[in-house]
Length: 359
View 1 (cartoon, rainbow, N blue to C red):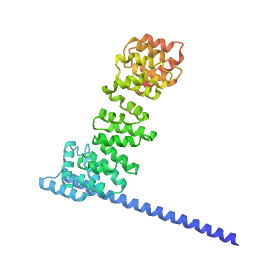
View 2: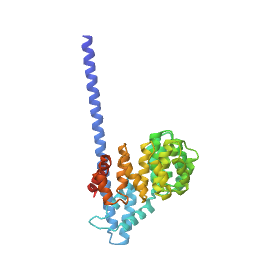
View 3: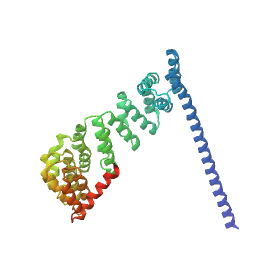
């Protein structure tokens, strides 16, 4: 009897929990529907105001519509962004509105609603998610007056807020604060590698200065990551460091520096790249072979042709990609494709097939 009672109570408890979950899901669906209906309603009103501004018959009616549109926004960042989206959506529409006229309208709206103040208030009073968003928007708007406030959040415990504050300062070209942030995450290897690439790509200041600042204080892993990241920017000041690293004993540094030197494509680096093309590490060999593709000497071509027979597939693939970019004669290409070295032939065929497929 006691066991049966416990079973009944357990069943009732399960039914209660299921019912409660159903009620909560139903309420969430209602709230979502209410939000969607509210946004749709706001969009309709905004679209009407925007069209009223764009096609107003008189200056006074146009100004009245701009005032109504500004009042509709009334300090709400979501409504402001919906308004900007609504304006820009008219580009290429059936009205064929000029893009410059649309941006001019946004400027007029900005004069009245002052979006910097909207996001500034959000930065002061919002939760961590709103603060994060406000940091990025203020940076995009060039609100340098909020730089000091944004700096306060770079050291925040919440990773999202810290990241967005640092990214905002990245857009503002702040060498010191961006360096401090990157140094603070350098031991989190998987995370920091992605962030370093992203930050250097978005940085609006002097990339050389940022890299120098980091090189002075970062660990070896971050240094290698930075070198690989900035390789495409071909910063001449770092060439001596690349040459030294490419000839050194540290394998990760060698990989990074060979990749960096390869990006320059300088004839004076050919000998060093040829040596690297015979390195015991296949990553070094592949990087060197890619770099040799930028050179047009017969010795560079010979080294790349030799790499077509490498035991490592990735090196063969790099060599095949390189050789199709070099000054190879049709006869040499036929010799490779019809030769006894099936590694070489297969690698080149694979690249050529891919090129045909993408054309």
